[in-house]
Image 1: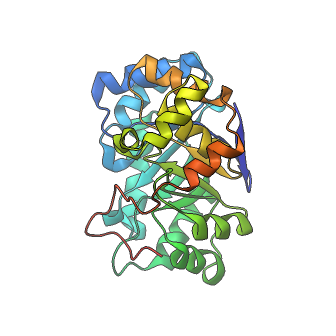
Image 2: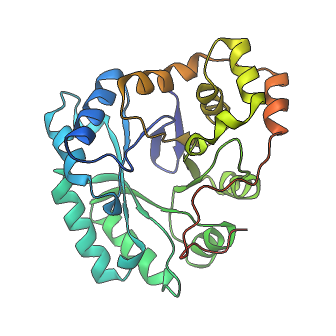
Length: 272
């Protein structure tokens, strides 16, 4: 498995996203992914499935130390006391003494970012999280976190796919040695609407989804966490690493629209 290195973190480029996976279906999906060679599992307090992920971690033969586990604190729990309760609850549900990466899931309107990041740092210092980071932070907020507050964040998890540019953010993250984890890397099913991707896929004998994933995997500092509950989808995502995109493929992808945002709730920040 190819990896992204950022700070002290070594992050497998392919992870299993678990948003909308619940209960036994979630546990089965995580166990199947680990059996197939996945070593990066992504969950969140808001997903309501940390207990199901924890059941898989308890049942798998894969050593805990070989698994990169990410979870996130919801934006309504960014006050230090609320964040402390959240990490304790997450660790209990996940049946583990630590997570490998703990993220602020969304910035909150009117939040005290310095206080929130300060609590994240304390959680890291106490060994409850090996590394800390953010999610859905535009460049302005990452700059504030890194340059004004001095927080040692190693990752920003954001929506990123062939139909949405994150060029300014990615350039900034690379300059600071911070990884980008792409959620919604398959644009929530929208990729089939673009014949250019199908044409690339047909030339290589693969799927449009595999083309889109390989485009992400080929980028320095970028990991991706597609949701994949079915065995066939999990294996297809792994097999995307075997694809080689050429200059013509990349040019065709570059020509696609780059303004399709799938996730934009009312509490989202102002995107750069």
